[in-house]
Length: 58
Image 1 (tube, rainbow, N blue to C red):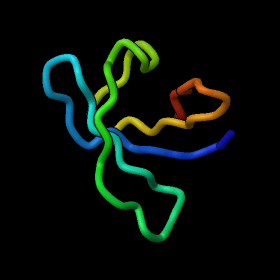
Image 2: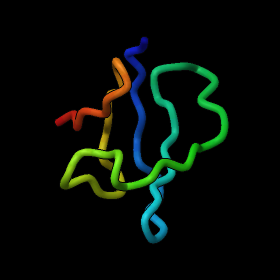
Image 3: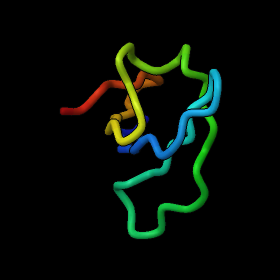
Image 4: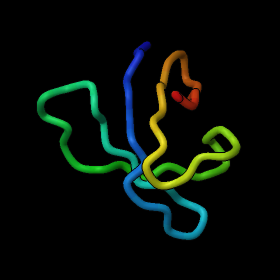
């Protein structure tokens, strides 16, 4: 599954809003629990999702 790339647009409490960046039609942001994301993410962080796991991109 994947890989897909996302950027964190907003963090509200224990949830982050991610928008897909690897497609021309990114669609609506999706809400993901912060507990599922790598430690150290913040607004503007880029993530890769592959095999049911998020990885922080630098």
